[in-house]
Length: 334
Image (cartoon, rainbow, N blue to C red; front, side, top):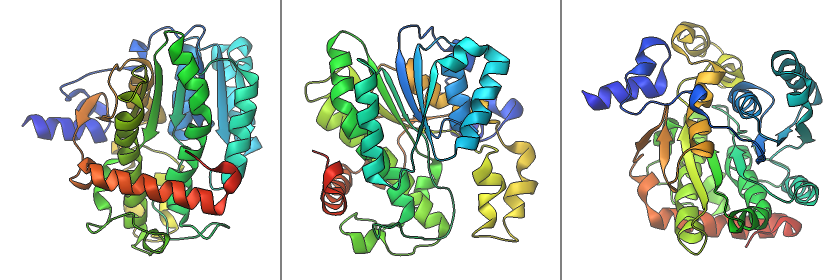
């Protein structure tokens, strides 16, 4: 019965969201004065809910990374109207498509040169359930945007985050994963570019990239947090079933007709962007653990069998280093 209650709380809105064994709300977010953060995809959807909450709780500076200037202007206008111009002035927008790894590295360099600390990094931006495409680098777009891009960003901001931790602060990183990681092909090995470029269907493409988000958090925990940097934490999160562009509009790209079951039929059960922000806000402001998979509102789950495989995580990150180094030498990660 507890498992059923947690599943309902993790995924749906309304009274069901209160059934989870571990509760957390955005009002529980602590004061963030003096802290500096980064949120990718922070100008709309769940990312906006996260950014809004961090600013509401007095974060001193917040970098918002997204593609669209129009979206950024709209987000900052809403923040100014609701929270005041002072809070909006604390947000700094950076234009970047996470599939462009050289640009991601350049944005990381800009942030490194603009601040002397970084306490929070939210790897939120991502490609949803859509058909298979390849980037200009010849890499599956789901993996390029949802995994490789965030790894480039995190890796080039990591020295700054380590220095912040050395000053006695806790640094928290979160990766936006999903229970849809269970849709990843059961024979996933992350062995080669050819493998990840295989078209495994819209749900499989998305699920594979979300599996990578969890594996990366657990790899980071083993190789960074527990390897000399106990104050630098990384976790993965599952926001639940949220009403966003992905679940209202993008779903019709792979499923023109059937998508209405999701975009319209299930809309009353979906969480709002702010409800979807809850587990990430918990992960980047409250938790003192690393390498966990945190489901809404703040319940730790094991994830699938593949998500628990250390070997698969090691293989994923070996492929990640090799592929980024080959395609974009300037953005190479260690």
